[in-house]
Amino acid sequence: VISEEHSRFKEYRRLLRQLPDDNRATLNALFGHFYMLQVFSQVNKMSAQNLAVVLVPSLFQAVTQDLIRLTREFIIHHTLLF
Image 1 (tube, one colour):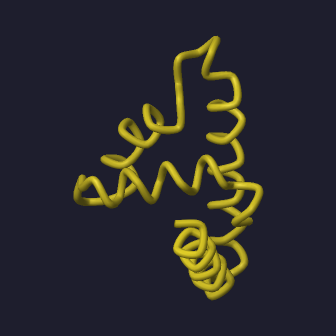
Image 2 (image 1 turned 45 degrees about the vertical axis):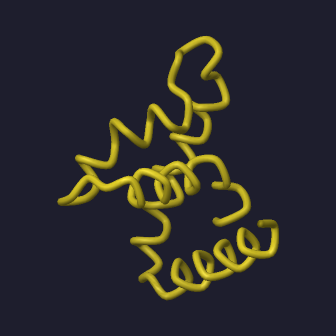
């Protein structure tokens, strides 16, 4: 599982590097904010999973479990990915 996760995160970083600088900076700012929200989930009840469920319909045209999982990973691992 760790090697699969490592490979997946490596691919995420590769794809993020291909984005234009402004787009990457925007995603970094958004997911940085979401990361900070989930850090305080004991107080605000907004875990990474809850944030992903709420955000996916706004960020994507479709709502799938894969998109929720992707968004959740980007929130949880923001500091690793960006």
